Image (cartoon, rainbow, N blue to C red):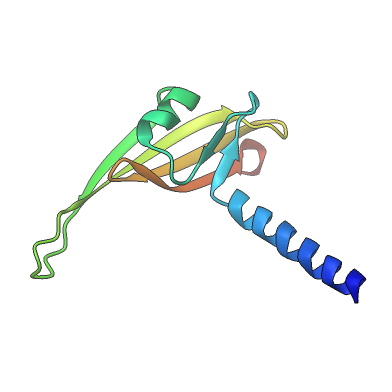
Length: 107
């Protein structure tokens, strides 16, 4: 019974770690770009993006909501597991909400 409990616990831990890593990118220097960071933290870690796009999304729902400012930052960075990556960081209201990376050789 203890072996089964240990197996279940290890499975849950590994699953949680893999889910957490899905919204992040680790640079060759070991620094991590992940969801929840601010735009200024990302720029401090990765430098100025090679391309930046700004969108303002406003939907009138009749309750007076503020518009969402979405910025898409595109980087070409060296990853920790070899090679160059195209990294797209989506920032909404100064908070990173998405990090997507594609290895350059797979484009």
